[in-house]
Length: 195
Image (cartoon, rainbow, N blue to C red; front, top):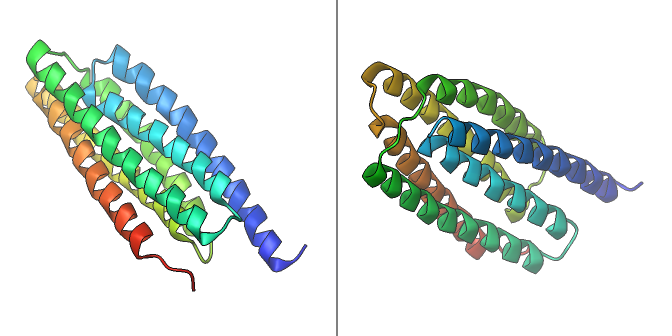
């Protein structure tokens, strides 16, 4: 196996690993978000689902031309922006209809997710010579890790205050992080040129 094929095989294994981790954590977020009435957890479930799709797109783009890789990265960035709109709509719905998030559930899920996202981030960071598509995947994992810290704080505030506003604020903040990440990915994809 030549070095290029070896590098692709390693990248493929890494992407399959982070894809599996994100699918598992997305299911965990949806279940705990539904049971715990948490906008922040549901938002992160949507985020991890979009991440899983991005990793699948990255696997598809692996070994293809730079044009395909830029197209895949643009799709990833656009998905993040669309996801952010859905999160904002869900937070607004919970604001008007009311919700009773469970702070301890939020905190427990945030810790589990932070560990999973740190593993994903470390796996992706180890890859050498990342193209625009792999840089997008790394941005997704970093955004997730930051979001988990927000959920931890929100869960503690929900426990302390007995109100739902910390959960809603973090849901909106997760959407803001997604918007920033989506715009960064699109900017990177649009400025990336074959070397």
